[in-house]
Length: 359
Picture: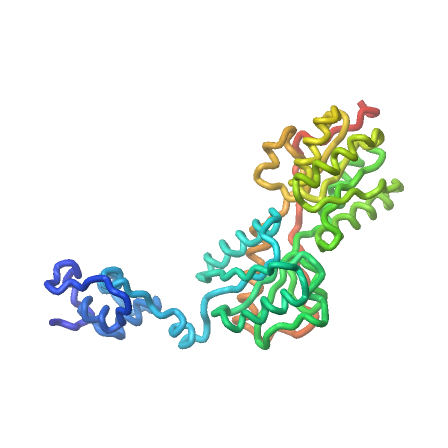
């Protein structure tokens, strides 16, 4: 039986076609493909120096035997696993889901897989537990999607040598942070409504412990104050459409409420329903601006004016940042990591208009 790497005899024509079985070794693949074990190794690791014909021959043998390269052993040899860990405590919010999707897409484009480490309850113990589990998983670095104030706590510690980038959080100066320009987006929403002639703007805020919600609410209040307007009482939701609906029932009874900035599109959706049920027309009686620009925002009734977040860019920058740390750890200072803000933009649709007094 020939063992030369250039043997081009199709696998399917050999007399001793192997049956798929568990535990097939690299030597088994080499015998079936008629090549050396070194050639199988080169194909498995994607190294050059193998002809396309030989590569296809080896791949066919792998499929026939059900052989899977030992990724852990290969990672130990290379010193990397080509896998990024992602820690997040919530998959129920649209922002976290889209950020996770963007990270996974960007990682795949760089040849990396993603391992998700969900945190059941957003507490310091749970976060510490998630980091501890990293020691049991084959990951090269970690991206944390953590929108509440936990990572700046002194009790949260990282395993030694783990490179980290944080998305959507106020993590202090201990980590590299990539975030949407929460302040700029909220400011643009409020200024748009004021420019239409509304005397003031009400705010449907997100959860109190959310960094993004805090930033947006602070920017709303500051922008009104700088414009010489009195901020109305803040109304709070929990990011869900249901909480937006409940808040909307309250706001519908405020006859001087002609403009609302909702901290996300899901709450804006519930708000639109409540206003409709109470006979307050949008935008004739009340103008509404959201935040996120989810795919469905253009299909709301009316189509929603909102602040667009570039989740794809946030994901790309998170992956780019953490890979840079892996490849150049000597440039990763322990403090003063810095924050990168991804710009937002106002998307004008049909849910905003001048107030009745200006028409």
